[in-house]
Image (cartoon, rainbow, N blue to C red):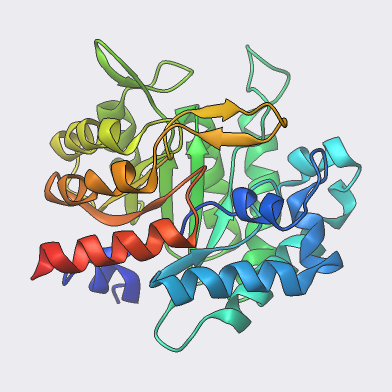
Length: 296
């Protein structure tokens, strides 16, 4: 049976949410604190962010578990609480989701490197993603979203780990830099190769998030479209990050400039569209309007 989200994307553009970290920082999350800790220490705040994105029109909201793998949490001494924090992230999102809306279990990169660049084996990465998957699945997510991957080998290890722990559909997004030769990850994986390899592994949808502006995302979606028949995901940054005089992080694209390119992202082939760093519920609300206008 086709998962409901993959049925839905055949009929219309599916709207994802925007940034989670940006919103938590706006609500007082201090630098250096693991956002996932707020799933148990400030659950009402996390749930409020989920609710704000649903209210803005998002069909799918991602859990506050981007850095929730035991390897990533180890930097905060929280590796032993990975299951607890991921489970709480999923349960809060499930509680906030109105009928007919969806929850994606977010799993970001470990921040570490596989051999020979780093000390880790593929099996090590698969095991930590499996642990995260078990908690997110138990919390009631509809789909697993392995996102912001900069190494195709890690993305594949994550996929295998997720599949060993749950039968839920898996979506994967890579993060690409734009250069004169096209779109490539930090580790040199091209958009075309990434999409083709992930399609071969039978993922439900593939795409790109982070790093790129909404204008650059248009070209990236086109490059992905040439390499795969899978539904495509596009979640661009609100431009490049900038540090203000007060030390706060801002982003170079205004809401109006960002949303200006959303119809073209959709026309280029993206079926799932949302935002990444620097975007907030206002961006998602404006994207919902732009998508609706494009539809009509």
